[in-house]
Length: 336
Image 1 (cartoon, rainbow, N blue to C red):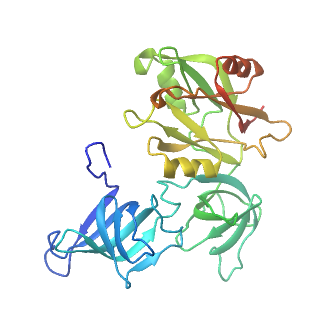
Image 2 (cartoon, helix red, strand yellow; image 1 turned 90 degrees about the horizontal axis):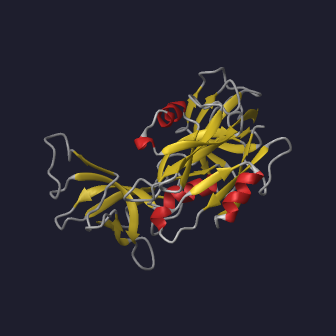
């Protein structure tokens, strides 16, 4: 909902009410909406809901699909039903969206296939990829562009981490190498905007070239710092504040739970892409031979001024810490 009380819908579709001409909304039209739950009836799920600012009437006969999470205030759902004469929507089916409402799979990782379902059910079933249990369903997109799926094949998996530790797969695709992100540069380059006091990193070659050529009024300059990307088993989610909704700043994380939480709970941050592949720390530390990447937060008085910085050198860490930035610890592990 925007600042003047209007509802910003992520999807609204009016369909035909039968074999004849389309039925106008408000006269028994079939309607589909996607939005967040704003209100639920007390003591149960049967009754009046509010989804995306719209009244939704749930009856005992309404099909409720909660396989992707419980129905709760703030959860994103897809509602199918018929409009009534009072402007409400009588729901025939309500489903939690995959990934707890995240606009994209929060988790992307690479690994070798260690176990796969029996031939009679393949590919549907439980897989083991890079030490993770991956649940593949009939809706999972399977792509074998770089070889066939088999034990030992390298695959890229995107999906959502589940409460039991498994990964609900959205896509699975064979790859030639671990961490093969199309168009990824070999390093993430750090820039600084002296007017804003903000830092920014990117491993997209076109973006690097544009900034070096003076894009955005030439206000961004290289600091001389960078860290190597590619070859890691995890992908970094990239978010942008997108003013005026959020801060003029970017945020990166390889933690799938953190990525999904930002997607789900922080409307001021817009998910842009999985920015690059890199290693993920375990219990706040990197494996031997990898370079720790620390994240700092400037903790400003106004939310619009927030910024994060990602550093690998002790000198940069000490300098950033000395300016009062909060050290959030090791969040990535780069190649040396």
